[in-house]
Image (cartoon, rainbow over all chains, first blue to last red; front, side, top):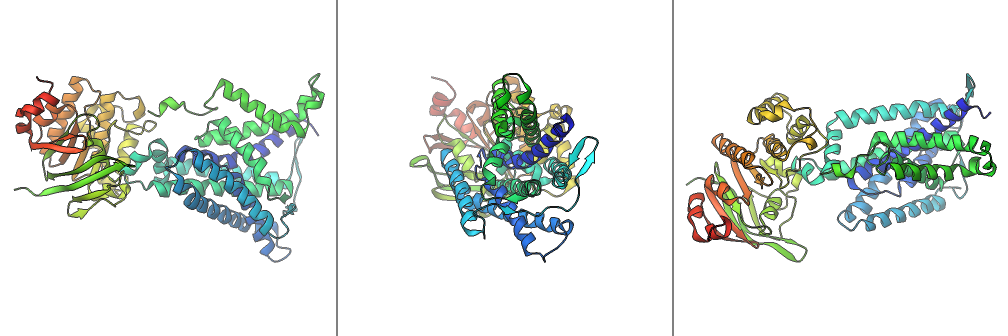
Amino acid sequence: MHTLPQQLANGLFLGATYGLIAIGYTMVYGIVQLINFAHGEIFMTGGFGALTVYLALPHGTSLWLALPLMLIGGAITAVLIALGAERFAYRPLRTAPRLAPLIAAIGLSLGLQQAVHNLYPKATSPRAFPQMQAGPWNVGSIHIQSGDLFTIVAAPICMIILAVFVQKSRTGRAMQATAQDPDTAQLMGIDTNRIIAAAFAIGALFAAVAAVCYGLRYGEVDYSMGFQAGLKAFTAAVLGGIGNIYGAMLGGLVLGLAEAMATAYISDIPGMHQLGGGSWASVWAFVLLILVLLLRPQGLLGERVADRA
Amino acid sequence: MTTALLEVEDLRVAYGKIEAVKGISFTVAEGSVTTLIGTNGAGKTTTLRTLSGLLRPVGGSIRFDGRTLGSVPAHRIVSLGLAHSPEGRHIFPRMTIEENLLLGAFLRKDQPGITEDIERAYTLFPILGERRKQAAGTLSGGEQQMLAMGRALMSRPKLLMLDEPSMGLSPLMMQKIMATIVELKAAGTTVLLVEQNAQAALSLSDQGYVMQTGRIVLSGTGAALLRDESVRRSYLGED
C-alpha cells in the first residue's frame, strides 16, 4: 500500500535508524573534528555482536527474552571496537594533520569489513537475523512490522537518555566544554582523553541499538551493511548540523522521510516516471543534502563557525 | 624571607626544533604578585602553558608547593592548586556565565562551598551576577575577562596565573581588572601575571621579570624595574 500515512511511517522508521547511527558521527566530530568513517562498520559489528549472542542462546529462546541480551552483546562488541579504534588508531594521530586520521578511519572501515567477512562463520553472504514472532499490526491505514515497533520504542528512549545525560551529568558538561575548547577544558581539570573515549563509546552504543533495529527490519546482517547505512547516517549528521546531537536525530528523520516520499511519489510527477522507486532513493537523499547545504551550509540545527570565538 | 610557592629552574620549552623558552629560572613568593613582562614572542605565554601542563618542557624543573610538575598532565594540575586564566580569555562561549563558573569548580565536590564561591565571584564582579544566565559568548571583552578570572578562582587556587588580562580592554576596564588583582592579593591569593602593559603590571607587582626571546634578561622588584632605564626605554615607550 502506498498510502501517505504508510509512507510517512516508513520514513520515520528508516530515519530513526539513520538518526541513531548519526549520533556517533556527530558526537565524535563535535569533540575531535574527526569524521569517523569507520563508524558504519562499528554499527555493523554491533549487529554481528547481537547475532552472536542469539546464536549462543539455547535453540528456541523467545526473542522477547533474547532481545535485551542481544542488545547488550551488540553494545559491548561495538563499544570495545570503537574504544580500541580511538585508543590505538586515532589518539596517536591526534596532533597529526587532519588527513592522517581520516585515512586511518577509511583503512579501519575496510579492515573491519574484511575481518568480519573472513573470520565470522559463514559471513561471506548475509546472515539471517532472528525475527519477532508478533505482528504485523494495523494502526488505521498504517501497517507496522514488529521490527519497526522496536525502532519506534528504542530510538526516542535513546535520544531522551542522551539529551539528559549531555545536559545534566558531570560527564555531559565536561563533553560540552571539551567540544567548545579542549585546552581550556583541561585547565578546568577535565581529562579530555577520557571524554573523547566516552564520545566514541556513546556513539558505538547507539550504533549497536541501530544495528538491532536494522537486523529486525531487514531480517539479516551483512559484513557490508555499514557502508550504505553509515553513508546515509553521515549525510543525516551533516544535514542536521554536524556536532549537534539533536541535529543528528532531526537529520535522520528528514532523510528517512525524504527517501520514503521520493520512493513512493517521484514517479507520479509527469516526465519523471523512471526516477522513482527504491533504486533512486539514495539519489534523492543526496539531492536533498545538496539543497540544504546550498541554503544553510551549517545544516538545519548547526551553529555558524563564527560562534567558536 | 618568604617561602617560594613556585620555583622554576632552567626551564626549556620547544615547539619542534624551535626553542621558545631557553632556560629560564624564577620564583614566585607565597602571597606575592609576580609579573613576567616582555614583547610578543618573548615566551611568556609558553611559560604559563608549560606550568599548567598544556606544554611539556624539554628541560629544567618546576617545583610548585613542594611537588615537581613537568610531567603531570594538565587536567591534574588544577587540583594541586594552580589555576590558569589563559591568554584570549577562552571562556566557553555557548555556556552561560554560571555554567562557566561551575566548570571552574569541576573537580570540587563541596556543593555549599561552590555555591558560596559563585556568590563571591558575583560580589567581585557584579555585572556577572546580573547576567548569570546569559551565554558567555555574548559578553564584551572586559566582561569575558572578568568571567575568565572568576572561573579560575572557582578552584580556590593557591596560585592564580593570569595571561594578558588587560589585552584589548578599555582603560577603564583595565583599571578594574588591575584593582581586582590587588584585591585578590590582599585576600591572600598568590598571582603570577603576564602582561604587555608593563606600567600597570609592574606598579602592583612585588617582583618582576623581563623576558626577551626566551630568556629572562632582567629581574627586580616592581618598583625597581619601573625605574630601570632599559625597561623604561623598551617597555614603557620612553626615549
